[in-house]
Amino acid sequence: MGNFTAQIQNAGNERPTPGNIAVWILIWAELSEFALFFIVYLVVRSHNPEIFSEGPKHLNTLAGALNTLALLTSSYCVARAMACIRAGNTDGCMKWLTATLAMGLTYCGIKAWEYHWNGEAGIDSRTNQFFTLYYYLTFNHLLHVLVGMCTISWAMFRVQLGGFSQHQHEGLEGAACYWHMIDLAWIIIFPLLYVLR
Amino acid sequence: MFCDNGAQVTVFEMKIKKYIFGDDGDKFAMTERHWLICFWLILLALTLMSVFIAESADPAPWTVLFVSMMVTLKGQLVIDRLMGLRHANPLIRGLMLMYFYVLTLLIVWALLFPEQLAALTTL
Image (cartoon, rainbow over all chains, first blue to last red):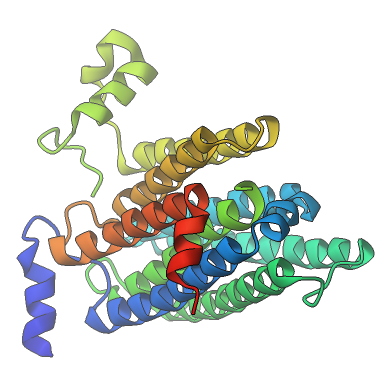
């Protein structure tokens, strides 16, 4: 495993790959889970075109768009935090990680509003197949955001204790990559559920 | 990842520099911070553009293709620029990019030819 990790780190030879092999296996496992549900969504959609064409019209597109902007901004914040730690600026790193958490909380707030809005409109997970998959995908993604927020909080704790430095911040890179993975999953979920009809 | 040394700056990046700074763009050394802001704004613009197109236009094959292209572009920007995989291990980067290429192609196929997918998945 050590050799393979070293290979992964050096084979690119231009720049080291962020994180370590365990983080990338985790990220691929998570992305495969999402891919499986995207495929299920597409298959069910192909058998029920009318329901899935109507479904997005009943969703709160504004909430979905705002959540996309919040997650893209959070990815930007995490990238800025990584730039700060690489420059040895731990205060800046803490500031940008706090901003990442704030964006994560914003996402959760918007999602709560969206679910409430759906409830007011009489929509729940048993309305039809589209909404069953909508709730499964979005709630699953929300859980990943919560896990990501815990990971970022842990990274902040380590930064505060001096556990990460300009030259040693592999754990922070792992947390950052996990957060970007959450953003990547949403980049596909948003058009699939809210935009494409 | 984001280069200030000039050697790894692509034509696309040079165009952005020129757009921001004008003809004297080459004289400015853009820092990692500048590039991150640029790519963040591009990502926000792409999101708003695809929402606008999808909301204002009737569902049609071209909207599916356009939105899917935006998804692929956004995925590539996040993977290369925010995650920092642009100059990282080609296997890791390739697998991440492949995820977006394969899934968006699958989405385009499933939305444009649903009857083929339905026939393929009927027991």
